[in-house]
Length: 226
Image 1 (cartoon, rainbow, N blue to C red):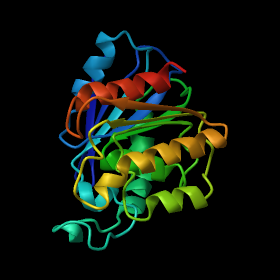
Image 2: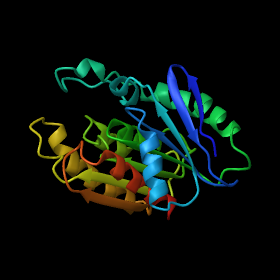
Image 3: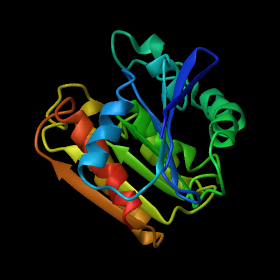
Image 4: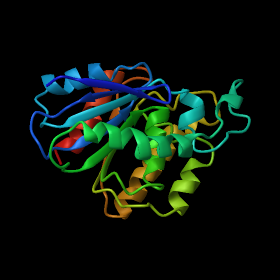
């Protein structure tokens, strides 16, 4: 079926519709508008029929960070904590318009993202009940204060299935926050399993920027096939 493209608030949204009605819809926030590559990879792998909605054109650090970060990097002023504003835009404007382009009902909604979008994906589960499955690939779960927030706060809705992944070299960082990423991710995976969430945690070979397309596709395929 024909892809459908629209813009809201300078964000480019691309809808890759399912072939049939009553299929899942997965929302994927992307950095370089590379959602089409992820979609193509999923089709090659014979993924179950679903609709993919990709959102690009974000100010990545500002709009995906849950709160402002302190002395994080030389450019820490970029992490201004706009995730709640973006989530409101996503749920109140982007999703209704995207779903108005689809026929029939929706089986379920999923949310996915890589890096800071993976952090946003997990954060969103504490703020909205619209997503029943989520995939955070190489998520920035090292973000200052996030692990404690996630352990101490109640999920808005307990997801049925949750996918977390990380590169096995990502923790080899000098930055005091980045080097905690594997510990944070594994602690949170254990926490979500303790809540009886079907949680998959995968450790992939390489660093943060390796195999982004295939890692993203792996997470989405996992939540689609549960």
